[in-house]
Each structure stands twice: as structure tokens, then as C-alpha cells.
Amino acid sequence: MTTTFFKLEKRPDASGRQVDTLVKCVGNPDSVLGAEEEEWCTVNDLDRLFEACSRRWPIGWDLEKLITAVRECEFD
Image 1 (spheres, rainbow, N blue to C red):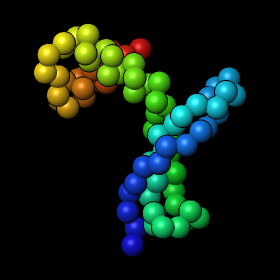
Image 2 (spheres, rainbow, N blue to C red; image 1 turned 30 degrees about the vertical axis):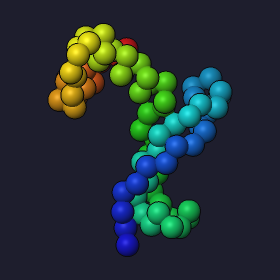
Image 3 (cartoon, one colour; image 1 turned 45 degrees about the horizontal axis):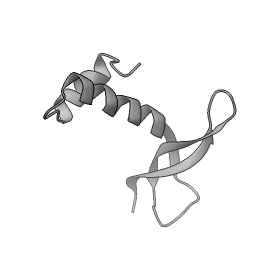
Image 4 (tube, helix red, strand yellow; image 1 turned 90 degrees about the horizontal axis):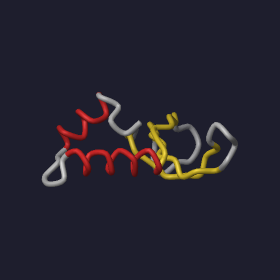
């Protein structure tokens, strides 16, 4: 069965430093081999995004507001 799943692993950033990275995989989650992988973002990117949303909307930000922040690149 082919499914989409995510895994967290250490990957090198632009400077070669190993960072925690969220990787999207399409394939069989029980088989390490043969899954298509795509780097999504680092844990640091997610931290910055959540921090930006919390500053902009201190109370009650939701998925729609998070998507707005991503579209506006609020976390850069």
C-alpha cells in the first residue's frame, strides 16, 4: 500500500551543519527503501513560524491564520 507519511531526521543545511528536518515520504511506511522523499522544512523553520503567528495573533490563531502567515512569509 502506498501512503504519505512524514519522518524527522538529521539533514545537512546550506552550511553543512546537521539539523532536524521534516521529510515528506510517499511509499510504504514499513519499507525504508523505495519511498520518494521531499524535504519540507526544518524544526527551526517551524519554531519561527509558530513564534510569528503567536506574536501576530496572541490569542486564538488557527490553521487558516497559519496559512496566511506562510503566504505572507511572516516568519522570515
